Image 1 (cartoon, helix red, strand yellow):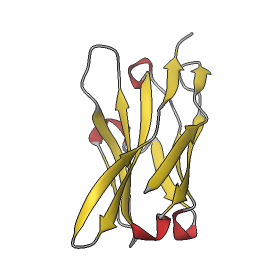
Image 2 (cartoon, rainbow, N blue to C red; image 1 turned 135 degrees about the horizontal axis):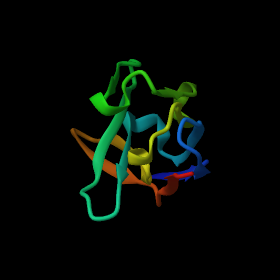
Image 3 (tube, helix red, strand yellow; image 1 turned 30 degrees about the vertical axis):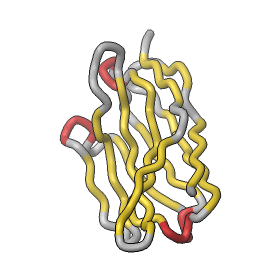
Image 4 (tube, helix red, strand yellow; image 1 turned 60 degrees about the vertical axis):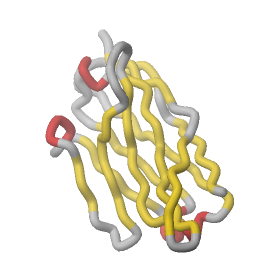
Length: 119
C-alpha cells in the first residue's frame, strides 16, 4: 500500500506561481512512476507530468516550459512547480503513484488539491 497526500494548492492570479507537494508513505520503495493529473469542472481527468524511478520526465504540451516535476530521493515526496499560471490551469490536481506488486503494478491516488487561477 502507498498513501499519497497533496498540498500547496490555492488561489493565484494569472501569471503567478504555485508549488504542489505530494508526500508519500507506506511501501514507497515499490514505486515505479509518479504522475500529476488534473481535472477541471466538467472535464475528464488529464495527465500533466510524469517522473520515473530513473528520472525520466514527461510533460503534456500545454504545460511544457511552465511546469516542473521533481522528486526527493527514495520517493519521499514529489513536487510540481507551476509558473506562469493561466486561467485554464484551474483544476483539482491529483498525485498518482504506480507501484510494483509482484509481477504486476497498481495505481494509488491522493485526495487532490484545488488550484484556482483567477484575478
